Image (tube, rainbow over all chains, first blue to last red; front, side):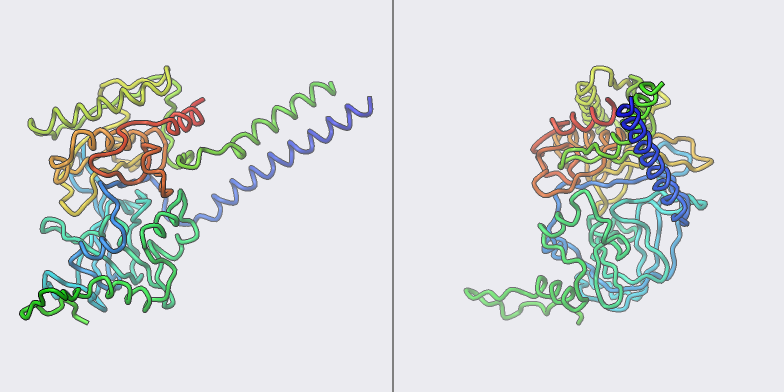
Length: 224
Length: 190
C-alpha cells in the first residue's frame, strides 16, 4: 500500500510543479511585455528570394539614415481591402548607391503594418521603424509612391557600430530558420558597419571588361 | 482514492506536458498563440473574395483560391472550405506597387472599429498578372496556410517540402500542401 501511495504522491507533486511552471512562465511573459497591444500578425511573401548580391544590384537606392518621424494610417479604410501602413521619414546620413540620381536628403519609406490607435499590426519580417533608430536601407521605388524595403529584407539596424538584419533586439529571436536562410543567401548580420559597407561597395563596383574596354563608360554611380 | 488521485495526476501531467513537448516537423512551424483565430476542427471555413477584382483577373485569382481551398480541405476530412459571406478568410487584391510583395496576410486584426477581424489576404495586382497560374495557386495555398495558423518556414532546403516556405520560384516546385503541412495541420487540429 505504501508503494502506490508514494507513487501517487510523486505524481501529484510532479503535476503541481508542471502546472506551476507553466502558469509562472505564462504570467512572466505577459508581465514583461509593456509595449503597445498586438492586434494582428502580418506575413509577406515573394516570387524568388534574392540573395544579398541580387538585392543590392537590383535596388537603385541604398542609404544610411535615421528615422525622424513615423505616421501610421489605414489605407482604403472601410473597404474590404483596407490595410494598415506606416510611413517613415528617414534623414539620410550616407548614400551608398543612387542610380536614379535622386540625391535625396530625406526620403519616405512605407511599410505594411504598424500601430493604429495603440494597437499594432506586427509585420513579422519588416516591423515598423521607430523614431531615432538608424538603419542601412536597401530600397526599391514603388510606382511613384514612397520607397519600400527591398523584399522587406533590405533593412539593417545600426547599433554601436554593428549591423543587424531587421533589428538588434530581434537578432536573437530570428527563428523558423531565418538566420540559416540569411547565411545561405549571403546576408551579413551582426557584423561591423565598415565590413557591411565594404561588402555592398564590392558588389556594386563596375566590373572591368578585359576583352573590349569601354572608353566612355559612365562614371560609377557611387556617390562615396 | 489513491488510484483516483494517481489517475488525475497523470492526466494533469499529460495535459500540461503535451503542448510543451510536441514539436512540429523541421520544415514546418506553427504560430499557435499568435495567429489562431478559430478552430477548423469545427468543420467549416468560410472564404470570400473581395469586391475589387476586375473582370480580366477574376477567373485566374478565383480559380487559384478555389484550388487552394480544395487542397487544404483534402488534408483533413472535417476541414472544409466554403464560399460564403461574411468570410473567415478574405482573399482580395490591391495595388501595392511593383516594388512590394506578391502576397500578404494579416490575421486577427482587432481594431475596435474594424469591420473584419478574421484573416485577410491581399495579392498584389501590380505583380499578379505576370505570374503563372501555378504560382498564384501556390500563393493562395501559402496564404491560406497562414490563415490556418501556420507560420513561414525559412529553413534552407525546405523550399519544395512545404507550402509554407517564405518564398517561391515562378514556376513553383509545388502548388499546394505537402506531407509536412498535413502533419502540421494534424498536429494543430487533431
